[in-house]
Each structure stands twice: as structure tokens, then as C-alpha cells.
Length: 131
Image 1 (cartoon, helix red, strand yellow):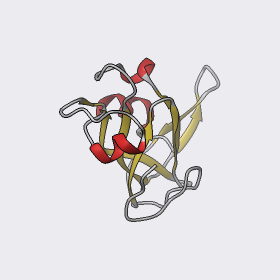
Image 2 (tube, rainbow, N blue to C red):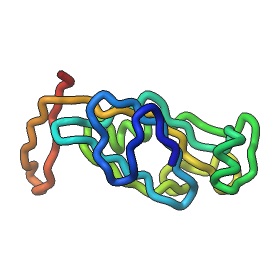
Image 3 (cartoon, rainbow, N blue to C red):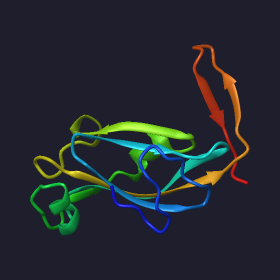
Image 4 (cartoon, one colour):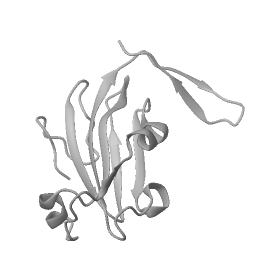
């Protein structure tokens, strides 16, 4: 994982408004945890092998122009939540380069006024508005 201006370790809560740049190699777990009363907001998300330095760190071949924008997919899965954990693999992201891609994201945790309520399926849902 590569971290941006504020060094945050895996499993450590991200302070509100800190911008975090991170990469996650193929067949590993993306784990984001924001502080209490903060939610995940993605600035960008790319999946593929279009970064030579990250390809080397993930031990996969660099492939020029081989990545896709997965911002929308990650927003559907994680945005607006305090915590997100998911496998980085072809089941969720597809296979744009043939094999072994990596995920490169930029996100922040934004303070919110979160109202948690129980749905009919007994799962909690967050309704939030940025502050």
C-alpha cells in the first residue's frame, strides 16, 4: 500500500479530510476505515497495470494503456460508509489486462452527520450528509 500526505497504516482510522493515495495488489484485500462520524469519498479509482512503479511493486508486468476507471463501481460498494473491505480480484473488477492487475485509489474520509437506522433485514444503513 502506498500512502499519500498523511501516513495511515492498514487498519488504522483515517483522520477526516486527509487525502490518501493507496494501491492494492491483485488477490489481496482493500481495507478502508474512517474515523467515527466520517465516511469514505473516492477522488479516483483505476484498476489495471498502467503504472510501471506499482506494477513492479505488485510483481506484475507493466502494460501501457491497460487500466480501467472503477470509480463508479467502488462508489457503489463503499462510498458513504465508514468502513469498506473487499477483495481485489476479477470477480469484482473484471480482467482488463488479461491477468493480475492492481487497484490504485485516491480517497478521503469526510465528516458527516450520520443517522444509522435498522432496515427490515436488520442490517444497518447509513444516511449521511457532508458537514
